[in-house]
Image (cartoon, rainbow, N blue to C red; front, side):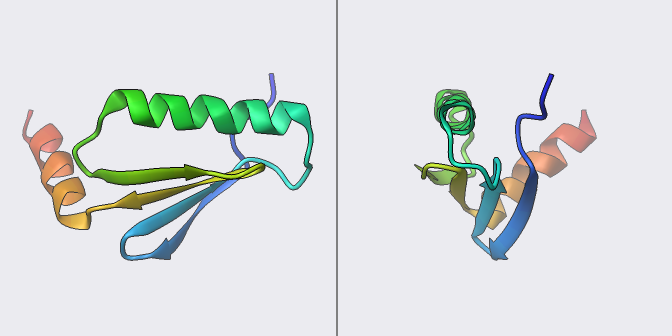
Length: 76
């Protein structure tokens, strides 16, 4: 089975780019739609916006809420 994404890169303090593939095809876009759906349905408090494109997904986040979420899980 192919990996769901190629890599994740930090774009800024408030944004991550999930690169699916360099190839533009239906399989790549299907993965983009899947990742977008999972992130949107998970309703993470730290996710501000999920912006899909044809071969990647930009995730805008609130770093303070992300840190709070991580710390809460580490305590458990």
